[in-house]
Image (cartoon, rainbow, N blue to C red; front, side):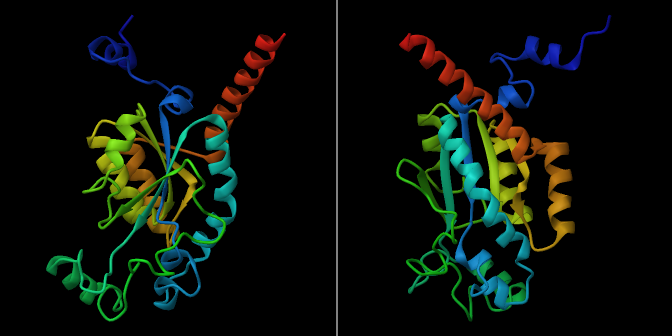
Length: 243
């Protein structure tokens, strides 16, 4: 009988591969990344909405994401909030390349209008999607949560093998982080209903691309089921130990 591809992968690898969603998202080696759930990208008063983009998907996401984050904390997964800091008073971060593209394609965002200004309301986390004590907070200045940040230091220090990705915008910062996470040898799980874009077509294109080349696409319900099972096992073990 021919050898199955996963069996060959196990035989070839120097580290046991994580196979299947339940194995990948076990909380002891999983980090939930909450990407760019900020006023700038989700609020009706942010630049994105004022520039004419449809933010309804991002706002709907903000309503369902907190319970998923709470599930991750309860199961013992590492929770990492990631946010953009772009504009500063003396422009510490935006290069000529960035500014040229902003001037050409972003309706004045980052040039005529500050974007995610340092210390500003726009850069704050949006509505109910807020870090809690014990959550890590990573500031970034480009699309990827890995680029010139301390994210990987945090992941290594906590023994993380899998990143579960949520947040905005699916096809920009979430996708860029997924791509870079994969090439840095993290298992990537992109949560379909845990992300949002400003068009369904953009969102769907990222799901297809990530599933094909960079990781696995799942749902809140599927990931939550794994975490709930772990919590149930922990409670049973604690109850048995108390007897």
